[in-house]
View: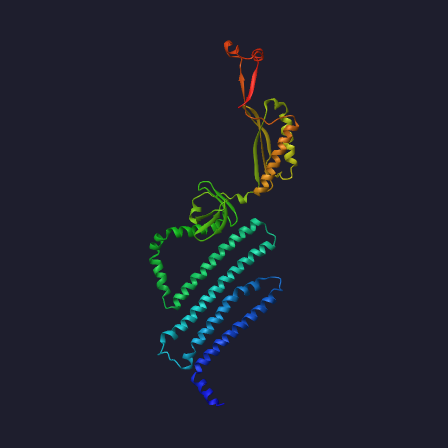
Length: 391
């Protein structure tokens, strides 16, 4: 075999062969990096904390893309480095390769930084859960972590944008100066956006609610669970599963109630017994007080009252005012149901009955001609008779 022909081909196509080997080396480097990262991840999983493993997982994709991008850029630069193609032949292409390397480095670094910020946020929340913190403390910590993540991500994006402008040859000082001169015009044009931004800042600082809280606004007819707090709007899911998208500036002008942070739930009900049961009412009230003192679901540290309240037209009314230990909506109603049944049972055990609306008709003042048309038993009992009928 005549090797001179092969040598001539290699000499003739030297830069193409070099480009091929550079691409092959890039492929092998990517494969080798994957093996190294997988081995490192296996070793890190044996440690008590998983933070290094999560950081390694967050950096996996940026590192992989870095190998591909810089390997392919090196392959594209082979013709110029080998002298086969000069800068004069294609000046724009090879000049752009250098700029693209810088832009790729900036973008990959920003991408890796934002992924690491997310990892630290998730790690912080997980450590709070492992420490046995209450659900309220965890929700508040989650809200704080979300706020810090948004601030850090915004800082990274703004810094990346300014560095990219400087890399492309745009004067950053001119851009900042333009921002100062045009700030008033931009402020007028985007005042709603700025209002939402500052509204978001107030939400993060004051923390009237966090993600997962049940909030209520009577003046705006808003009620539901907070699903997401963004820079411009907050998403609230109503109890009929409809999403509400509320601009954050709205929260600076409306009253927001946060029932999720209540300490107890209140039972406040009024009961009425018949007027003929007035004599046994003190025993009924004492029985209800005893039942509430012994009920395991009633918070004895809170105020409990059971008192005669009103002599209404058709009943003698007393009220029950107490608080449950739980704040869970479903559990509260189960406890309230039990308390209502027990009160009804106490009234019956003492020989009383819960009253229903009635009317009393006095017949003593009726004319004699009308009384003549009444049945005989009614006429005989007429001077002192009364008749109670349901209203």
